[in-house]
Image (cartoon, rainbow, N blue to C red; front, top):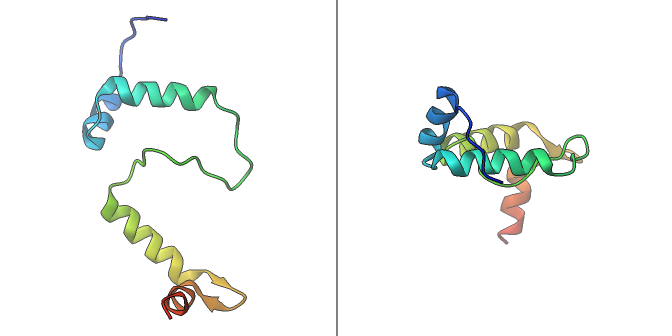
Length: 82
């Protein structure tokens, strides 16, 4: 289906920040709307609104706070290297 719509400036800016054409960003958003909802706590994989540096910082921050039966994620990663 072809449709003409007004794209808010905020969407145009977001697409530019992600390095995507506006049409791609809008298509992805529409596809996500049509997908089945995910269970609580799950996230959809795909284009992240974060750049790699921000994502890395958040992952490292989370990894420093969470444990698996008292073992830090950092220690589990190190154990996997041996």
